[in-house]
Length: 244
Image 1 (cartoon, one colour):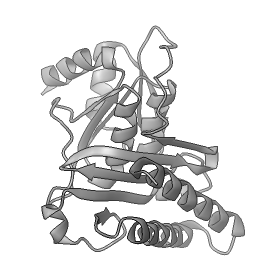
Image 2 (tube, helix red, strand yellow; image 1 turned 45 degrees about the vertical axis):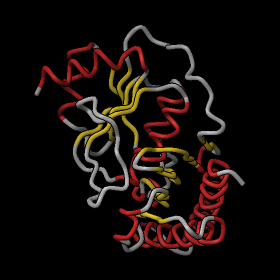
Image 3 (cartoon, rainbow, N blue to C red; image 1 turned 120 degrees about the horizontal axis):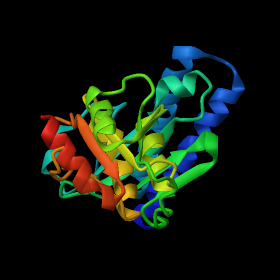
């Protein structure tokens, strides 16, 4: 099984597990979110141990192994991106499974199980034709960064809101949004798989200063992210720079 196929397989399996746990109705709220995090994480880690025993793993839900910093191949996992959305019965949550090679997003998959969607680097399709004359900028429904609002005002963009990072990034892949801009409060597991899929689909993905996204760092904090249509990248980055 290729790395991309493995990422997709594990993301889909974890997604089905999470849907089953939620539909069972044995717990709700924070307890459901905690259970989903644990069970999906265990499933993904077991699959990686079986299929890629020599690789390292960085997961939101597991103790960090500092030896990974010396490794070339590191799987970066968020077993449940958007725990609050999942626990509250929404559909805008995701599962992220990505492989970083020498610090760069190499392969990955994002499952959005409640929408019956899975996106992966080996199945990436070109981004649809732009559907609106005004850019559509998608932001967090609960923690919209001021930077995103200022950029939207400057470039004349409409703003959309959605829950998890993976769901927002995949909205750009689907052509339902044109820009996803985030600042303040993400980690490598929040955006490695979305960035890998977005780039495979021909989108721009970088830090908000235009520098590359680098993964498998000793400190996994990666607080800002820009994913957008390539033809918008220069104007968005210039606007961000002018606001600094």
